[in-house]
Image (cartoon, rainbow, N blue to C red; front, side, top):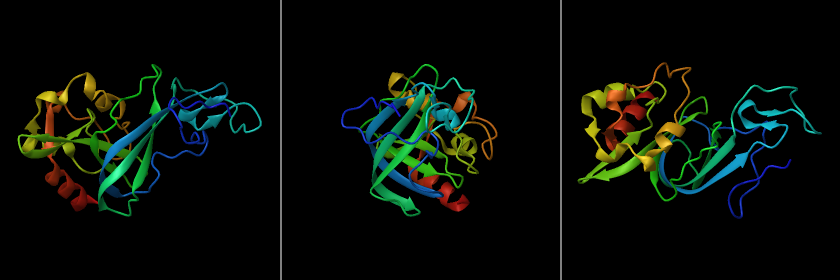
Length: 206
């Protein structure tokens, strides 16, 4: 359908109408390394944000109201499956906004939570003075897990939490809705959680 992936030797583009946030269902939790990121720009008549094809032989909608640029596909190599059946490779999909700005995090480790509804949340796994920490996106939403309360109680200040290399924290935030009723306060932006405590909170909830 004219979709162009901005990477070399890319797999076929996700279907505009039927793509899902993740290649696995939730609830699931795992750590993994990002091995590839691909961007798929919306060609004429296609809008990933609306799951819409508005022209051509595969048309499924007549209109779409979105200012999104396209879709970003993140591939991770599973390091440790912590909950649920998790294969050796998992792909995540994320809408790219109007500025067509993706992220660059290849080779970095993340804790990925797949929520029961299919949405996903990412926490970067960072070593800090002998501790293993999990840094949330700036929204701090993780379904029914109260990340803000955990950060307020046992969060660790992380000097590298803000900066150009942390742009994923803004781009990968979950939208407000469902169990995510509000983003965490800005005062917690530079805090990360001990990885084990976050895993424990997730397992106690899901």
